[in-house]
Image 1 (cartoon, rainbow over the protein chains, first blue to last red):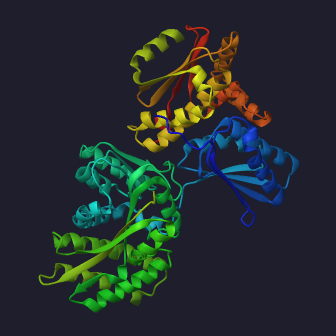
Image 2 (cartoon, chains in turn yellow, red):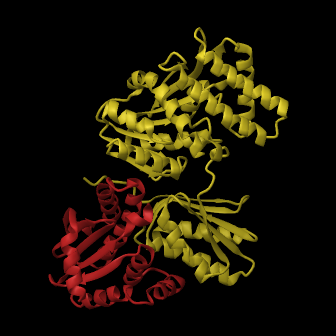
Image 3 (cartoon, rainbow over the protein chains, first blue to last red):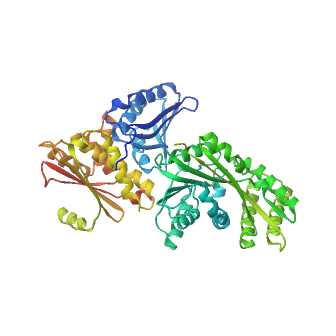
Length: 391
Length: 172
């Protein structure tokens, strides 16, 4: 069956302040006349700028030769007419063919250069995607899954549906979800190539097939509109500096009537006994520290507002506490030890004083002490929320 | 020698899918090119290493081929599309009826994609032409998709473009 789609599904935009002209979506016209307005807009943008114009095609999903040639004609003519003009075409490493297509422009015209956008997708990325963090991520999913496997059906997860796990990291949630719920299709997307390589390796080793792992930018996905019954995005909105952009994309790809499921933390509510005060101090400071990296680890209770602002209805919010009593307390302790290392490194890079670092570390060690204490209790609270895309 | 090599590889290609449509119906709506390429690309990419990106890349190439048949085809007969796979390469076999005399044009255009100056020809075309010719579209496939193209004229007046696309290695 061939789904009837919109004839032209693209967007053209010019931001005169940053001198960025952007093309997004699918542009496959039969003739140049169909995109005459957009061609005119590029011409106008070039006329409006001094010096450099960025032509942003990071979100360009498809462009046929008719449109490609029409746009580059304008760019090449402008360079021939104006020696002061420089055009920088910004492509994405996700859409590999755009780079191959646009790279020729710099050969034809020295005033045009092509840059591939593939480095930082969010400010704290290099910390969270360090491969040494992989064992911690695995331990985290192991403990959260004990809770999530029972609450997921309340948020719309059920067998036989199409599922997308966005910001899948090392892909362990996708594997668990596939085993437990047998979706008809499951796509797992992340922007970390090492994490995806790890995910594919683990899936192959365990004989897990059918998970479509894909490299992509969660705020600019190649996935088509209205494709999935259930879209999950776990522990990720809190680390993106623009969570509303990401939510907009999740909203776009879920089917009307389908649900988007998000989990996030409120780290200042991490707790433990004994040594409660030291633990509390460290996690309060952690929230403050991470906010300077544009990471909001207090996001959890804000989930309802963000989902509502994006346009979801039938919003369901609940919270659960991962504790040292969820199986082996050593698993919980290992997670905290991983956090101590990573967050102390961040504090050092942030320029915190040695006395601060020492006290900061102590709180994590006290949390581990509480987790392993025979009569102790240690907790890590998580907010799970979902909203339905209106029909 | 070329023919015998092609025959050997032919047998090694595994069929993935086949699609037929009355040419008159196909030519009734330009957006068939977009819809068919997107839909078939998703179907054949599901078991590639990165199915979403492979599908996007493959759709891009297939759409150009379908647009060539849309612009150059006639209403009598059927458009036939078969997709095969061998390792990291997909083979697209696209048959469509075209006006008498057009076979020669395609023969020459396909031949140019294999010439050593294919890239120079392509750059010249995109530097100077206002709109792409069918020849430059075929050059685009050779230059930007590393495609290898052949032409089969056995079923005249229909022609068959045979295009090998090694996209899996380029995506992953």
